[in-house]
Length: 575
Image (cartoon, rainbow, N blue to C red; front, top):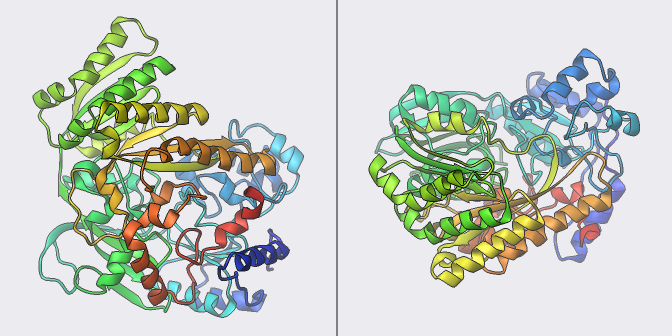
């Protein structure tokens, strides 16, 4: 039986009115599909249509100590387990309606074994979990979904892992295309994009493949795939279509720099191949325009490089402001030099991890001497938690396996996120570097947990054929800040966390150009068209109109008509 919508249609009327008053196209709905409509769609897709179910539902309906709930409690903070469940999301606010009290089905993100959420909330509500999912297995499934939503105007989303920080893969009373079971992986050392003549080594990934599956495959074939730092993230979805950065990007490029071919179903139902030799404009749009915007990608082929040896330096200590400032001063003072020498990596208030895929042990030790000496001094002074590691990993995969044991993204909680790209200009003079470090410290103090990702392609030349902002090429750092909350936060507290994250990143906005990574950006990013795409935005708008004139694929900050995130929380309540 068709469920009652979990977020009221009245609120959608308010949102449509808000959109009209701001000169934007109102959200449009046709009719509520009947049970017969859903049954017909189910038949068309071979019986693979199923209802959305919140991840924590068994704890509300089966009993808190039931076998089913015990399994949920044990895996509630497990990123891989969440990606295997259609109704689960890595950040749990996207499972809820954020402006409706208790319109959710959550457990305690600090301790899932606490019974209080179930006792207080009593009811498990669908929130923003899609009403229905299709287990996608073919291009025909996607075409059928497009035909259905064109007729009914039911909102459509695409979901693989639920690792979308901006909630673009969840919408109340929507239809979700679950691509998670498209797990094909193949390697061709002489891959030729269809319609082209030149070959390059390439790995083809189905839309459901995750980095935790891609990297072992690369290891087995003695190749390197440039990817993200979280094993649960999908390879070819939002990460790849939105830019895709990682610790190897400085010297080996962003994800979009390395795509050789996409196979995609566009909203007209056509299955298209996009590469340098056919559908070149679509290829350009998919190389940075954002996931779930121009079509549903079912597979992508990316460049495979020879296996690389990584020189690695890790300095860590128990954070305090004085030591953190000293660490970040060292990173800033050497930032331009280290980027030119091929270093990438990460840093937080108590650690710096630097890797280099193209250096010798001797050159790496000489280059990293300021950081190594800092770490050794902390150890000699008896600083709590001080450690200095200088080592070599034989491949990216071996480094990744060691790294991910202790460094996993926040899972199973709600959080507001904001980010900024830090220009090379911020490293030029002593005063520039001092201002940068001061801004980093201020942001980390405002919202603890700031991450410095040394993942910009600062040493990798642009081909001119991608649609990410060109500011990626002139940046050294990508900075993220977060402001988290738990299951029992009030509507006002949730709003305050979004404001807090935005105000935190303001410390860096004040000293940098308009540039941010669209996949990890503030949902209220000012001037987001420029920040995400720069001079490419007008062409992306034109291509959006060409490939999706009816806006069947619509998401927040994905073009000039973007509304489904409004359904998660009302903008007029925020500011």
